[in-house]
Length: 177
Image 1 (cartoon, rainbow, N blue to C red):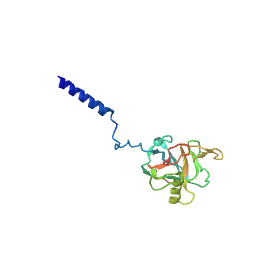
Image 2: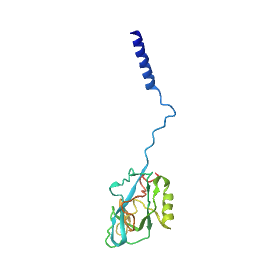
Image 3: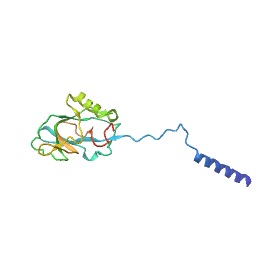
Image 4: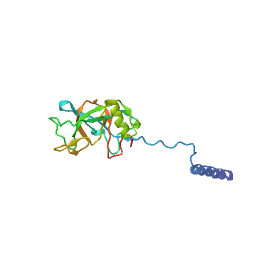
């Protein structure tokens, strides 16, 4: 009986020692969660060669909605000062962007390390005057003096069923944030 009790005591001591022993230094730390960024999509076609782009139900401007490891096109905008075409009445949630939208070839979000770099991708892909589109680019009001959000109209042609990296200037959900 003495050996049995001694054996139990030894087992208990080993279990206690193992429970309090720190993990070896070579153990890998847990992988960080993938960063996410906001994306937009084509919401519909409009009159006179216009399209409406916006977040739709999948977009999240507050926490991001797409891992930055994904490869998506950038949504780009060239403001030309175009007046609002007949058939569109801009408002806060669906403004007028005063120009054209287009998409680049896909690029991994984590390669977009700054707004300047993203603007450069648009300019290099589409030409001078193009930059990354931003959440608040839609304008409304009698002289288009107010900035809205969530979606906007512009001239252009972007692929249906595709998500696009889109910037937002007041939230940390850009690919570079």
